[in-house]
Length: 403
Image (cartoon, rainbow, N blue to C red; front, top):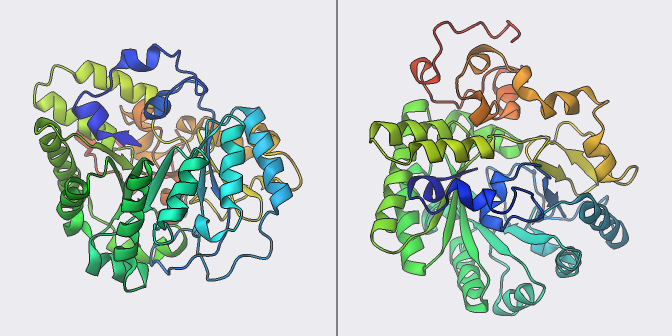
């Protein structure tokens, strides 16, 4: 997660994170990515059921709830363990989390036990009454997924009227006083919608947007051929930076982030250096604090059936199940070879990743994307768009060569 507005526009300084001691439990939400202990943010897919049929759904969501979803009692037990372990944030996801009848109870329980609760939703089920209830339970944030404006979004979501209903949900959240933002997954079929998304932020006074790079998981694997090439990625990242700066300069700043491609960090820093920005050293310090990809360390996923994954995209490999062992035990058990390697993955990456000068900033990027594209978990992430010159590689070793 790269905070474009934080870094490029200077809304966050290294001293802001240092003032709190960089402990997850003490950092406010907007500084959490700079924590030192990397207590995991847990994405909890509370249900597999969804009212839409999105073409890029990483969870292979279905119309009906999965018969093995964690019960209410098991869910409270999970939340107890997460709280005791020091998890700072629980992100309730799905499927569509609002399909689950006891979601409000679970969110309230998380908040009452000292964790921040956020939801990732398609927004279509957020009525005015639901928004008020979400506000009452102390929800910190609602992220609403859109893939463009009406025509494009409804095609991606598999339902006519999905955009209209999601926009109503966003407005209902704003009316109820809940912080709400957009989630947008970049690919060739919707990349031209990015300027319109920025226009929507202004028009609807939406304070935040996250632009996600495509990860080849779930139904998103079917879109691999529609992923942006390196030139297209550079172009859209520049556009996102430019539009973010324009909003900031006009006095209407928005929180803008890019997610799931940590090459964005070095790319942003190199651009600032070319522009002779006086903040380059501070930005580099913040990027080092961020540490890049944190799958298996600073982010975790618990599936609807209790399976524990390195992140929400790594559903083909489970480290264990919370029905059998507490999450905290599973997450700290480095007798599992993959878990141990993910905790120190910079030692295991191959090829250009192994010689990259930005490895401490990027963290080796997405291992699950490398595996999906090449079959080799430790191969370079194919979505890295930095040139050999930019990564400082004089001789790039073959992928077969260990670091």
